[in-house]
Length: 270
Figure 1: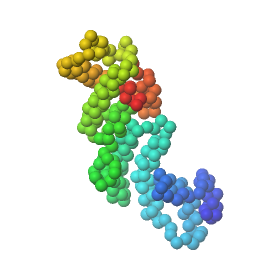
Figure 2: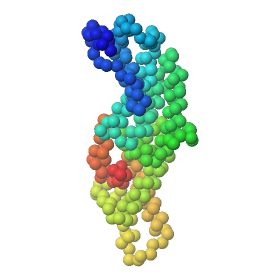
Figure 3: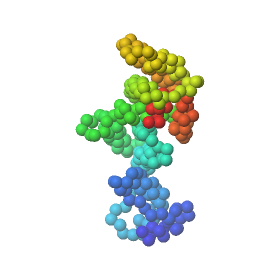
Figure 4: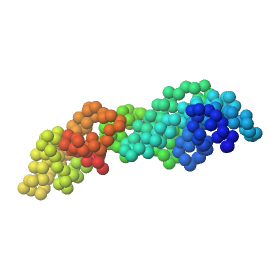
């Protein structure tokens, strides 16, 4: 290590940093290890000539390292994004989509086998292609799918499979309808006069204010249809509205649009 320090001092612009060892239990440590090797390449190559070591990196090794770095970088970037103070569960599906996209864009001689194996493993764990592992297809996981839909940065564009995005929208309709109905029953739902859901309130509340405690099946069906239609109406406007910038705060978005999307905002905050 002393020889390496000396060689680092010989070259202007080569920072005197220690080498990094990869650790299986530490995220992105192998990526950091290889990046540091490239940063210290000149000093390492000269230090290898000065000391008697059992193994030296060959020219082919040095050619391969930058290619492997390209393969590992999508995972390192996703790790840093997941550690951001505003990171949340709605990032999961888009992060995985981004990793797939970036891996598929790599076409380098000498690493395609490694790349293909990484893609196979990703599909096993995150797209439900192997029933033996405990992971499931994240795009069919209700909590992940609904969180992604309700993130105004992503909505349906965060999904890799558009058919699964549409299925998730159906589940969102059902869940939002149940929350809306429960909020009405508890009397906890308040709505602004400008809210698009106001059109149904007279029809819904008139039944609860009726003179009789008995309610026929037709009335129940009418209420159910009205609630569902209001949720669909709100969702139609939400998904038609443009997505917000990736760096913006999603909770701030929902606070600002509480009156515009009173039903969906309840679910978003939950």
